[in-house]
Image (cartoon, rainbow, N blue to C red; front, side, top):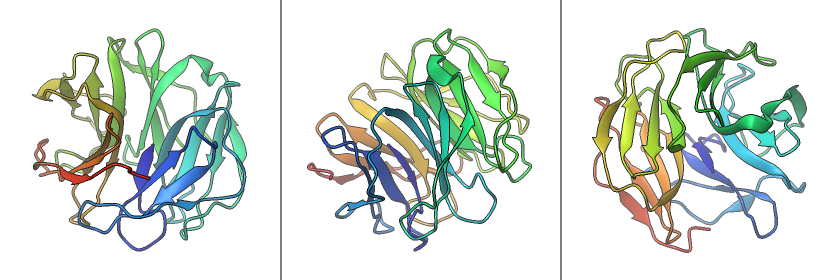
Length: 242
């Protein structure tokens, strides 16, 4: 699952691959934290895709999708701004050892980058150039027990940060330095062990990064950010969240 304004209405939507049929669906947001009936993004199946991330990688003002396949390739799907995509291309290989990804402009060059957690516990920074990505550089270590992550400007300083959920259920904020590296982690919450998917998105259009999580019970929890690394109580779309 990942989230962004995918249909061009200035409201964050959810994008998720349904394991039952391998299609990618977009679930429109109402701008207040709840999400409506899903629609199919395209007619092709996304079989084998195991990781999704979204941001404007191509620089055309429209959200694009990055997806890592079980074959180790990284695919770019440019968005058309209207709930669809305009094709696909391979923009990386050798991603078989990557288990988590998050997208944002981490170095401030107005181009989408990727942060990726390797099975060895290292966090790698992959700068984007609008077409593909430079070789990864180790940005941080000790991420072995992180099971979810998402990126956005959670602190209001115009630098991309990362939020990560530990296996213990604790929530950690890694404030970005603006160069693809991060400050020491700060624990900001607990009790997230029942969340199974996580993404950043400004779902209420207040220009602040929010968090959206899918609970093990199928409900969608939308947490409005306060630009200080914290969040309001969640707005819940009950299951079935499809």
